[in-house]
Image (cartoon, rainbow, N blue to C red; front, side, top):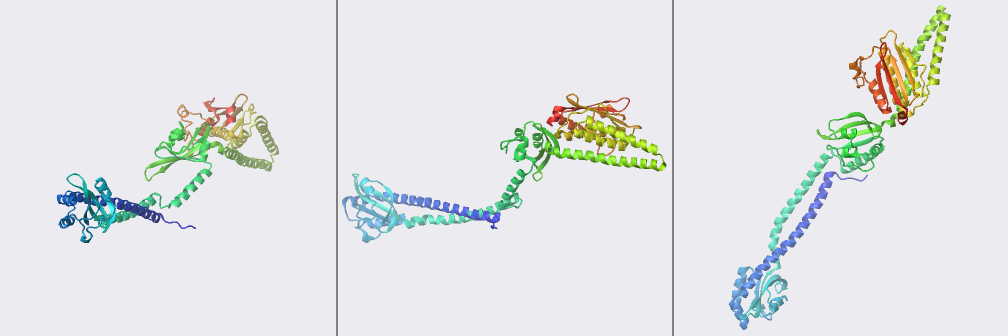
Amino acid sequence: MKTRWPLERKFMFLACILVTMIMCMVTIVYLYFEQKQARDLVGEQALTTAMAVAEIPEVKRILASNESASDLHPFIERIRERSGAEFIVIGDTEGIRYTHPQPEKIGQAMVGGDNDDALLYGKSYVSLAKGSLGTSVRGKTPVFDDNGDIVGVVSVGFMITFVNSYFHQGLIGVSIWLILIFIIGVAGSFMLAKSIRKDTFGLEPYQIARMYKERGAILESINEGLIATDQYGNVTLVNQSAKEILGVKMNEIGKPIKELLPESEIAHVLSSEKAAGSYETFFNKKHLLVQYETIDGGGTYAGKVASFRDRSGLQELINTLSEVQQYSQGLRAQTHEYTNKLYAISGWLQLGHIDKATHFIHEEIGQQRAYEHLLFDQIADPTIQAVLIGKLSKASEKKIAFTINDESVITHEWPKEAAAPLVTVIGNVIDNAFDAVMKQREPEVDIFLTDVADDLIIEVADNGSGITEEDAARIYEQGFSTKEGKDRGFGLALVQSALEELGGSIEITVNQPSGIVVNIYIPKIKGEES
């Protein structure tokens, strides 16, 4: 496996390279400009000295008359020594030296080939040339007589080694500062690496990259939709399942959630700091189950995550579980009830009451056949059949007279998608009726079902104690119940939610002489769309 450098070592290595490159560039630029500046300063000094010498009357006279310069040489040397110049050479129009630091070179031609601009054009300038003493920076100026004619040239020079030493002194100080900058850069990179490691929870960059790839693969592999927002309500994450469920086609990262899902409960909760927990909501005619979680930013609110899925995706599983639950309850109740009946028949036979046992058996068979004829011949929907069979068994166990109206007829078979809400509606309404009549001396519950028109109509009547007006106003609130005990108050709340899904409605009226009547209306078209 490839060896990876820790973040600190990588930062220090790269920082050293970067700082070294910057230092080299700064040094090169410094050398170039400092040397140029030194040459310019020395050249200006040389030119100023040359122009001052060219204005000396004795110099003009000697050059104009071609006299001997033996008396001039000591005077010029004193000027050279005071100015610090390497040489001050005076030449005639032919470039023959009149003065020179080395007396033996007096009378010889000047070296360098840079006199033409002064002798021919009368210009004063600074040049860099190699003479008899070596390479030097020279200030050259013509010498004019009283008539303004050029009679000679003055050359004042400083050796290039002197010019270079002029800025070498400053280079030492700059080098010290560069070394200090290098140390600060390395220390700063180390501190920056430590800070970044702290911000990344001690993870190396390659580990973060791997986690990012894994996160992307996980988000796209799950069936649940995921949307995350920051503390300002801007979208930071949308996985593919969320795009499919919500109908989002573009990449909406960075946009406000209220623009992505305008006027929706999901956008309202995600943009709110306090709201959290589990909710059911509708979006684009889809029934969604949503779970909200808040992101903790070290004690501050850092955003929120919503995970959701289409409730219809769970429909098949819910339908199967609902049917199994109904059959299970029915079988358990039948087993318990028929065990009691078998004990009764066995007792009558042992006591010799054969006629009574025979009559009881025939009565049970007749009642069973009547229920079978009603359930299987007049009610076509298997979901409703399963619910009613289970409730018949439960009523028999609880000693409740549960009657299915002989006029009940259902010819419409509801789609699988509507099975779960139908089970919720019918099952909870009947269970509430059973609970209402349990304290009555002769508990009775009647149910009537029909779908001859455009709606499925279910009417459940009981002879319980009824309900007060005050309780009727709160009966659909989740957790409210007129009965004692825990885990109460969910039946009618679930019924109300299921009816909203089916597009149905519910009415509760007073039954005579006691109890209540619950009327439920569910449109067939809405049920087919569910």
